[in-house]
Amino acid sequence: MGRIVALGENAPGLKIGQRVGIGWNSSSCMHCHTCLDGDQHLCVNAGRTIIGRHGAFANRVRVHWVWAIPVPDALESSAVGSLLCGGITVFYPLLHFGIKPTQRVGVVGIGGLSHIALKFLRAWGCEVTAFSSSESKHAEALQLGAHRVVSSRDKAACILSVRRLSQCHWYRFA
Ligand SMILES: [Zn+2]
Image 1 (tube, helix red, strand yellow):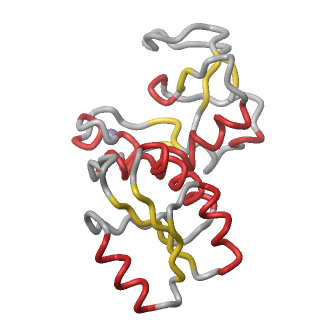
Image 2 (image 1 turned 180 degrees about the vertical axis):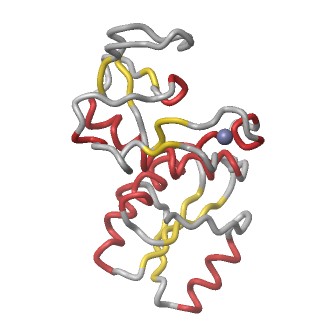
């Protein structure tokens, strides 16, 4: 999160002093098939914000204007920061697979990314099942938005629960 201190000649829609956020990517080629299809985050030539640079420890970061996301002043940086990385990571599959609010969706493994996924899916209106091998995370999953939690160590319960899901796409977060 930060404010723009310099702009290139071809950076439309941004202003000096504007508050912006940057996620995992800081550039993409903007001319490959993937970029032109609107999937710039999957560009094989994408520049990474924290790899080979100082990342979040830098005082200033140079990015392609597409990757400087305008952020309203009213939003807390601590709330927005997680959306720029983990948030978009779990939001993209919802768009990619055309998840509708009427669908039953399962989230496997309750960690940092899935915390956000549970919140998004619940807010979107889906019926949400969380799968976790850890009993200690069941209450947390329910609090974050899951309608039910299934132990991933219980094979029979998993099979029954997966059959209830609207579609079955496995989207593995690296
Ligand atoms: Zn590209």
